[in-house]
Image (cartoon, rainbow, N blue to C red):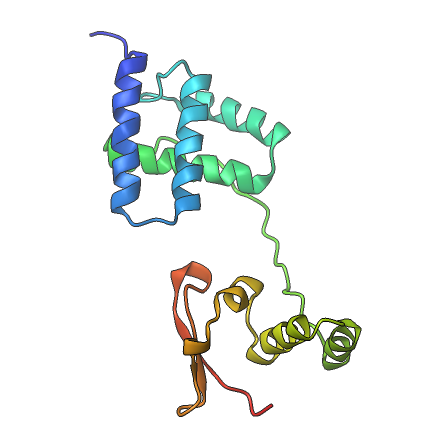
Length: 176
């Protein structure tokens, strides 16, 4: 039985990219997954087909010392995807990582804070933009992608396109 080479790894990496694209994942997710496989491949000299749980424990412990939990999770999910879809193997370390659970609250601007923002904004177009975001309850990116055609005055709603998670939604048009 021969040892896997860099050429074998490159072939499997290309297969990995094809699977990522076939799953219609977001470009940032594809980049994170592919970066994870490149880094793990470099770390293990392109021999990642038969990693053991101790090898993975050592790798992710080392990685956690230098990176955030979210970066470590992305590498873990990328490797799991690679094992499942490219190697067609079961994941060798199912309980390897358990990131701390933290619940972040969204920054919610109160009505008084919103008034202060509107009053402090001197450029009229910026003031209209901030007012629109606040009144629709939209994210910054959603507001930046809004177009005049997205406003349906007859039905009193606004079409928010390509929102978080590539979702589309309708938001009621506020009376103001």
